[in-house]
Image (cartoon, rainbow, N blue to C red; front, top):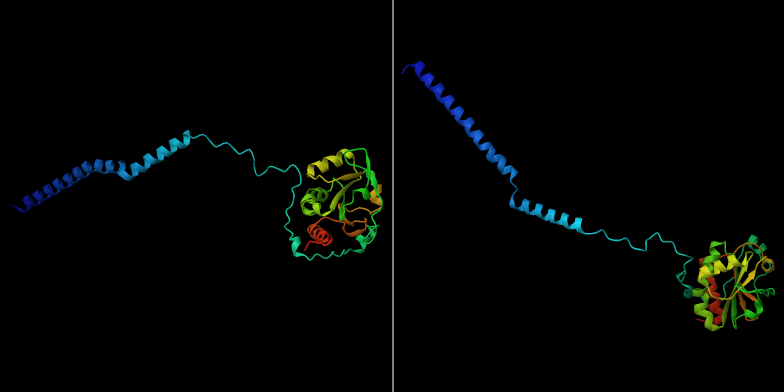
Length: 253
């Protein structure tokens, strides 16, 4: 065989191999594609689970919203708990310390007799004397105005702070609504949930015997009507010292 013939044979063989490779690649391509499109057993199972969960979620009705929400506002002041640890204080009568400006707003102080006051009862037309409402051991007198937020809070707290722990020990509570209509005063008092007796000082003349401005005011009177402790604001310190004063009077250790 000549050199030219051998070269032709080699070229023909190479062409036949190239054509065979191309045909093999075309025939194997669909198999690869099919394998890629066919999910494995775990994948198919997961797809079935997801489809089932989606079906259940779509068929489950949405939960109804609760009737009570966090944005619901209370209808009135809420009673504070005795978080001030009043029992940690001694049972001696607390001292009343005041600035010159506060002293100028007070016409009576510790050691003075509470002025004689006779006013209509809140919610009625009959008049009552403050002296006739005194407790056997002591009396807490609160002068308040319904448009003052701290007055509203004190009215709500007095039951838990005074009436409940000391009411059976001869200590009474009397409120005096100052300088507002009977309708407004009754609405404020009812909203607070308080139940102790209240007098109505519609024109503020009775309070003028006590002092000027600054509500609420809290006075503790002994059995004779003499002032033994007072405060012209309402705060955590007020509650703590009021409790301390009443414990001293009641003889609670």
